[in-house]
Image (tube, rainbow, N blue to C red):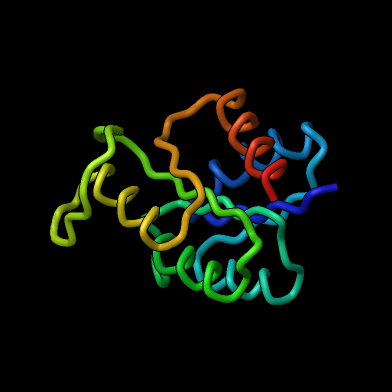
Length: 133
């Protein structure tokens, strides 16, 4: 059974994602921020990490980079809410979903997804990434 770690500062999002993924047969851990997520990675490990971008402490991009550096085989999905979803070049001073997700890809994310997304989309991305590992 694949282990998935969810890192998101919104409790409702953590609960919803955990329920969807557990119903699909995955073992799921949750963390409320980047530092907690990194601690859980050290303690429990994970085959796949799903992290939000904007969080207090260590944001999702920094968390993704640290996870990629420390756990090369762990798959990473970075998610962000709202905005445009088209690919865009890295824009360090821009505050937009597309630049966050472009930055996440550069930091080592295997996939990026834009909130809101439906459970079918999430499960397809998760399954595909786990099959690739």
